[in-house]
Length: 510
Image (cartoon, rainbow, N blue to C red; front, side, top):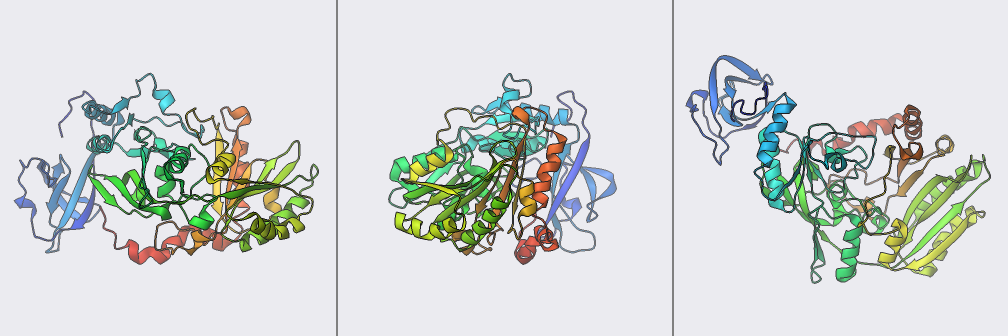
């Protein structure tokens, strides 16, 4: 890599990882004038003193590149040492990155000096306002390859943005000075009506995905209800929705993925829920299902102001009903404000079956909460999605969500009195079970297969403006913490990989 060509101050930072190599090559066999090649060798400059990388290998060199083979002290078999040289000074890194990106013909590059920069870096949750080193808009997989290679050569962290709906703003890096590869211009969808397989680029969002599958062949997939969520992260991390109890998670329907790896090459693989560990997914291929009709319903309970006892009782009845519900039930529970010091308790969703079966299986819950009001309506698949989401169109910009604090947790509630105490803001939970639970935990990297309820807590600053108050952080954390009532639950979050440890140790380090 060239020395100081851009006038910025450089300080070298060397990082490494290691893999066993199958032949013996000692340090003195390395040529100092090796040029970069397909094998990855780069120029190395020997220096007088020896150093240790991670206390493993004596390395008498200064790396000007990225790859070398060195013998490990005391062993006859050497190690393949991958050296990544980065810069501590972000100004140098950013200039190197922009210089590299300037040579890409098809990429639209937004730098910190671009007029649209502050708009393009906006996040779904406005509490986070990171400053990327650059934002690039790709139109094809080759663009993503170029951007990844520029990020690697400049030492810039690279992140993909599919829909930008990450609660913690990971779509803009989760930190400053990242390279954001925005995939929103890669939004094609093709359906093979003979096989039922659909291939979608990861810039498409859930609303257009659902509408496109319906228009092209009356097909369906299980996924969330927000039309603006991108399929990239939604699939890679699981992808649950109202249809999931009958059809599984979205990742369960994925049969293969087109992935740009960290070295810029393209692979086709079945990531099975581990996408972020390996590269940037540019397209998913799914096994779709025939789109079912459904019955949309909402059961509403509105007790008197200040009276939470009916909601607590209804919540306990709801748990009994949901635990025994058939997979044909897609169920969401919400507790929402209903005026000063008033809460409304709502059970809603879609039932994928006949009207007779709906009435028969819902009646026990209605008998348990006689003061609640039920409304229901028959829908086609696409009508049900639009009814739940409000609209599937993403032509208009997404409404500003404001300065939010959102917390999620999966748990079964034994006593909900303390939880209801914290619920004058919007809180909801999605019922799991059915096909989600039937899939083996070793099929994908999604862990919470045996979950019952998944809670999400939302709170926003007044009038959706900055700043989000510190008291709100304490408040929403209080809601979250009421679900962590047992030491076992807390331990489970730390130790859930124990059963997968033997398999994880077989994954090569790189």
